[in-house]
Image (cartoon, rainbow, N blue to C red):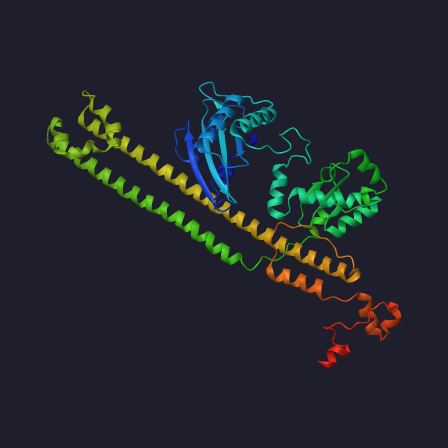
Length: 485
């Protein structure tokens, strides 16, 4: 059970993230409580409106619940209630969302920190330590396993920040993979210059930072703190090792970014864009159907009110609802006009004016909610389009990284055929054509020095010392074996 929470602002960014149907397989709005509006954007906007009357700049508390194993909805809400009691958020307006991503379900909860009627923000202190202690209790109660950082064991890597998570989504490389590569390069280098060259070979650039002495810029333009990328080594040792390097002679971050060019988008971009547009069209079709139904209903209500008022002018008011029994069939009519009918002292024309004004105000509120819903759809469309662009950029960078990996494996095998390079286990699935290319290069190779000797017409028997390397290769077009075919 992993509980991560933080105070934040930005209602629009938050609600579009929680309703993003492109990055998640399913999105479910499970609860919206404590607010007048029953749609997510309206509920979040209410909290921001209340916060404008205070000095609070972060009126939301956002929590994510990630269980290592599937749990029931009842257990989810038990955990939500326990978190609220621990952080002092009981009775506050909250919104609960459930996402399913990569086959795993997780939950998001957003509370309002503005306490009513005092209009004061609830102070939440030491929430990280409280959530860690509560996560241990809930894991023991639900029979779940804890990650090493919570189970009492040593923590191997620092916490991943939101910025690092966004960079990982854009680049396709996790922070753990990046730290592993940079740490290996650091441990294998004797000097600062050797470390700089090793980083360059891996696709990173050592640059001078604005606030720090050194930063690392990857091939995608993301800037990382050098000390956070090297595991198990303190800052003092890193500084001592890199002391011969003068940051003034290293490129700046802006200079590195100007030299980086993103690869071209892959061919499946058009297909995914078409699928996304189909999903958005279906969502907008439902909105336009509701819009047409609302327009028709409001026109009927206004016409019915005019008929009822005209009949009231011609007949006694006591017989009005006997002649129009469907008038009170609508709950909205009863809530709007019931209190007006009890005010007998008002003149009939005044009654009619008040009824028309009340109906117009209700219609305006309904159109305002529909307009807010339309705005939310536009924001969701833009957010999902950015998510598609990020996905395509990540796929392009993955493809580029796999090509670089294949090339390094080929040249390493050509130079040292008896010691193949172990590239490690890659959890991603490379392109099938690329995998076939790697297999071809790794199986049908010749030592590069033999290729040079053949081009120069040098006898390979003498050069190789008669160790049996003169056996003709079946794929060599210059060999006698090939000529006999």
